[in-house]
Image (cartoon, rainbow, N blue to C red; front, top):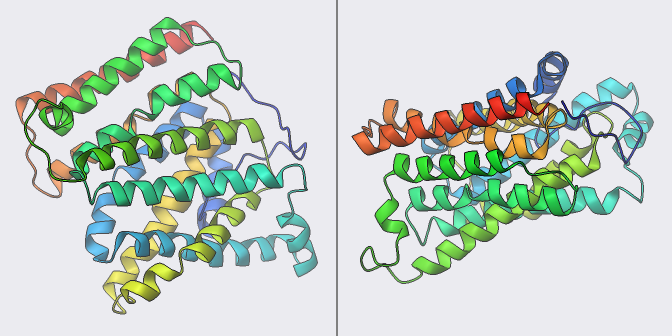
Length: 329
């Protein structure tokens, strides 16, 4: 299994994701390092598949949700890193990535925030299901970027697996007609939403490739920069939309920061450093698969026959891609 080398700090510590909490990092990352890469990556994606429940229960504006994810993570991660380094001077040294790595760290952080903003803007123009499907063309972006930038070979079987999984995703979300230009009239701004979704998918794919290009950073450093950028840029969202009422809503928002941004992304990044880019492209379909199941169980949106067939098709494509990866080493 491919292990990318560090190109930044020379450490062997895996990259830690945005908004990682001290509890998530301290408890999860050591275990994730002992797990095979694909297990950690799939578990992280599966956790992300439940994010809709937390967003729904929080009952706040989308950009406010994003800011809270960054803010909770920034506070927790700063305190945890200060404790880990035993002093504020040690904290400052741990946070500095060096002038060579800083542009990449800022790029990675900005792309992550941009992808969230583009998605939240797109779902104001197109149905959420359409936006989700379009965002998951990112495996193709990952394959292309990996081949062009990282010079990774792209086996034909892996390309087929990704394409089949995408077909399954379209069927599972039940929006095949909505994606077709001839499928009926669309509301004004529909194709703007489609374009925003595709650009957001490209941003997300670039995050994946840049993270692999960076390799390893000191534990918590990349996470802190991503949280800090998000908390700094997006603070206008809760100010403009109003702060949520104290109580249950804040608990759900805290869960988004600790579970879906800390725990999930820690697992994903820990697994990503052990995976070839082409494997990442296939395995990330675990996210929409779980999201569809949660939508069925929690929101009582019963899946039809074609949707169930789509879920099976996605799982089959993921399994086929994994078998191909094992055969090819």
